[in-house]
Length: 209
Image (cartoon, rainbow, N blue to C red; front, side):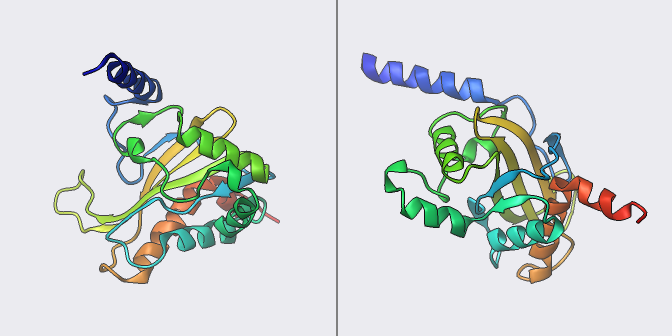
């Protein structure tokens, strides 16, 4: 290995070590890291699901529908608005899809580094967003912690502070027990994820009027 390649490898290891801790177990359905902040009054980017494995339907559209339907107090910035702005700013070199998110599925990530950080920072600056909801994966699989469990739609997502790349929250939720391909399975997973992110919405509805 040349000296130049060796230096590049060391830099990559340093970046990964600063961003993630591989010793931490990957959360299972119903588990979260961090606390979802109160997003009321904030402008939040909702990116599409980056990895889809074995899930029929449109997880990105289903999650966006669940979020916007649960709270109108958040200024949601959805993909169509972002794409429209990006078309007018081709020099920004950022995208809503195909983002490098695999590290989130392998280790506990405290802060994202480049190239993901740079893309999220530029994107949020374009739309003046204060937070980015990054849905990492939608999959159809069984819960590894429950022997013989029925496969269900599972959603993995994270909330990121785009100014410094800090991971504010990371969570995993799964839908109800429906056969593969039944749209209710995806809808229930999206609804559960929206309920977790917007935890205060149900508390508001429960308050006496």
